[in-house]
Image (cartoon, rainbow, N blue to C red; front, side):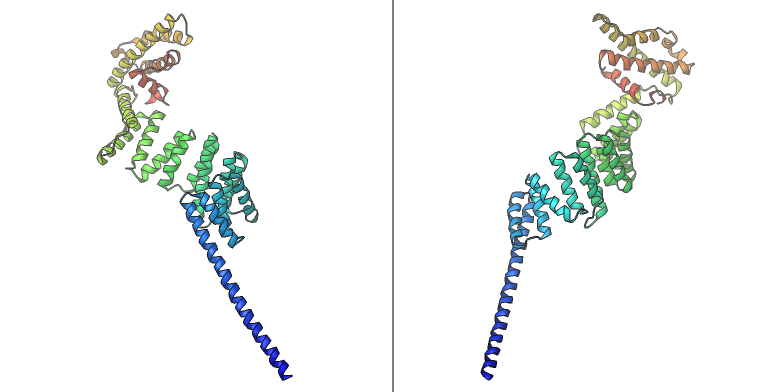
Length: 376
């Protein structure tokens, strides 16, 4: 019995030692696998950051062979596949991940981009919206805003200007006091065909940063296009003055618009001017418009054609009141307004019949097409 007991004890001790050695080896092997997985995953992430998705795919697949089902590695591999142009494979990979976490903001964003790349507009918009309302690590508010801006850019690319404008206005309404965001929104609103909204955002920037050159230039161009030439001149003059102070080159477009706005202000027969000055400008503009009308009429006649628009203008130009001298005009504001209207009508209608004018006639046409032209 003693002999058997000693034998059993020896076998038990050998078993314990073997178990310990086996456990130690297993843990060492598992730790080594984890270390290899981390090492290959790090290489994959570095390659992805360096813009080498092909190398990242190889490294990340190796990492997953050592650590299967590691979610962070699967996410990186799906991303690398998409960056490498394997759109369908990446989409399917992300869909598999999405099924386990359908509310993940990052996964939905990647699916939105891949759906857009595949030309699936419906799924792209669906996943963009899911991403906006999904869960995010870190600053979720900023990430959701960036996704909304990306959706707006996608809608602009599809010429859905109304949809893009809606998303942009929501983004701006969520953080109204952010000048940097306003500078991002304004150009996109211009592209969406909403110049007045874009101008409002540039004005927000200037309220916070009066010396912001980018906002001054853009706001000046928008004011010019919307017909407020006085404000356009003021903004562009400030922008160019800042350019000169900084020693930077002035945009040829901005310099040209400044010159045009300055000349328009010299020509404009504004009702706010003193009567003598306004009448002098009306008489000068009337002379320009009459020459334009006569030249256009001669061109139409030479081509053997006729124009009902020019016939109507001909009757208006025959009105003696509208051809009155400066002294007569000064005593009758109604005739002044009627003469300005005839000048503007002439520039608009002759441009439609005989093409775009040049010189001061072109500036009169800009005034004529601006909102509330007669009130300026």
